[in-house]
Figure 1: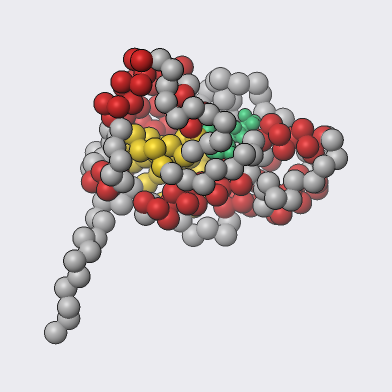
Figure 2: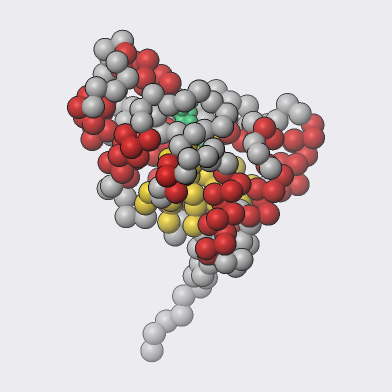
Length: 223
Ligand code: ATP
């Protein structure tokens, strides 16, 4: 007779989206997400390079080049895939719109999460319709060195405390509505720094995958 196991299988495993400019994608993106995915058991991580980021100067690499770098970087990971909807859109890519599109596609019961870094969490109240985000998804926050772990605004800190969970099972159990601060490893890496190092002729071997660095050299990016 087969033995029963005391482990409860995760039925509604969360799908996570990870948006960014990825100019270029680097280990500060990949390694925390890999760790997070292992830590909480994500069904799939959908990488979403954006086209016209509303909050920042335009990227140096073209949309196609940033997309190609994401493809090269995530190729070794079975549960990672890229989605081109934001890159293909001519209008600004607001996360709330993309997340709502996904929500429509997957229905109301499937758990959906949006992965962001700690720096993004701290400025979340500047995002378009930010107060609607938790109606549509959870937020999974990766630690990032050099950023406070609490909000300086009392209002935002109480918003966080109201929605925060320390139980990752909540992310799978509920379709949306929670913020999980993940204890992911810290990588002091930024795309800005990589572009500056490349311009200065310094190598970036430990900062991003070799396939991405080779592509940057081949396309003569960030000179
Ligand atoms: P740039 O230096 O050009 O501003 P970036 O390295 O911050 O770029 P983005 O593509 O703007 O990268 O970031 C996409 C997402 O990745 C954001 O949510 C950001 O918080 C997160 N992120 C970027 N770098 C790190 C890192 N080193 N550790 C944790 N999260 C990070």
